[in-house]
Length: 141
Image (cartoon, rainbow, N blue to C red; front, side, top):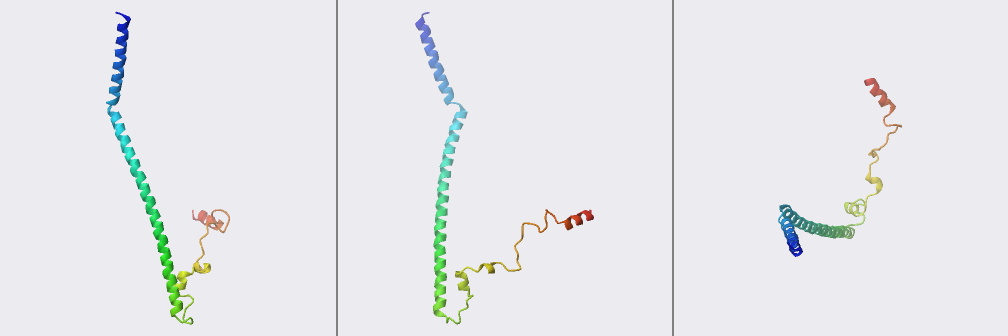
């Protein structure tokens, strides 16, 4: 056996190992499942991106329509106020009429009644409980 024979045998063995490795790697079921999952993930990413664009477009259109509605609402109230001033005798116009109240914001003092005080987030006495309520708890025990 000559050296050329061993060289050809080694070359054929290496080529066979390469073919076997490639064939084994490409026919593994987990590789196919991985490729399937990757394609599904790319499709999901594309759907997610499309949905984000739809949501953005929806909110942009909603904002535009709300702004348009606000300007139309203001125009209706201005028209009603002008009609009130033009069609009614100035002596008969009530200064607190509903149309004026809808156009002008209410005064800050009318927002809260005097007897409706806001709740406080602190106690009038120092500490978390007043001393009287602490004594009442200990005597009730």
